[in-house]
Length: 288
Image (cartoon, rainbow, N blue to C red; front, side, top):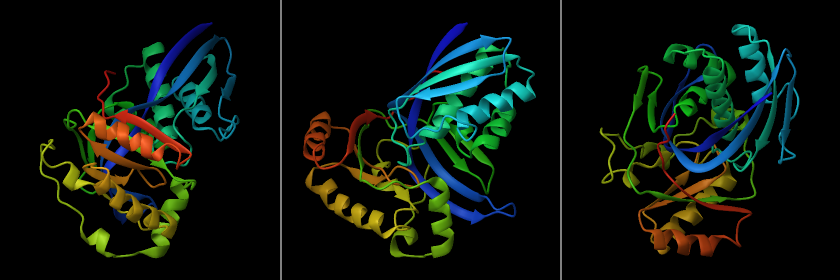
């Protein structure tokens, strides 16, 4: 039995926009997604001459059956690549469920990296996208652990240089939003409010000078509870001297940006007893 330990970094969307709903029912998206230092950790035991997949976790909310994305990933690769090994996976969960931080997709991408390396699959980028998106839209993006710009309508997948020395303060209200629920609500609302009309246009390369002014998330007004929270945090962003605030993904975690460590620490002290989840992190680019 061989044990492999692999990190699964959370992701934030510095920009997230729904472009349109496509013919197959999915949504075309535009996003600038960046990995951060908050991570889940996978402890994977490879079991020879077996097809069993066992999942355990420190988080009781994590499903242990076939609905778990790690289980589905394992079965997919066993079938497609004739892998005659089983897996015992212990998931140390640090990324909150329902936070929009991409935890589930990051976990699956981490498992894919392990499978690719352990079984010498030599996956091409096309294969990473094909098999990853059979699991979830952003699994292939999480696979690379790099800052990536995606534009589905124009078939763009472009690595970009993340702004340097950006500290992140994560603040999650006691609201859980599933990705599926967020898209259903978005389609129901079909809103065109003042915030959506303010969508910034990105100029490349993304750099330190323009990133705080380019934060955008079209989901921020889908749920009234989240839009109310966002307006409150925008005021606090200014008062606490952060340079920007936005929502991490489809909801419900928010993040503040700063390049000043003292601002990060002061913000953490302010929020730590006011929200159930508050964490310090930074934008990173990890080696594969």
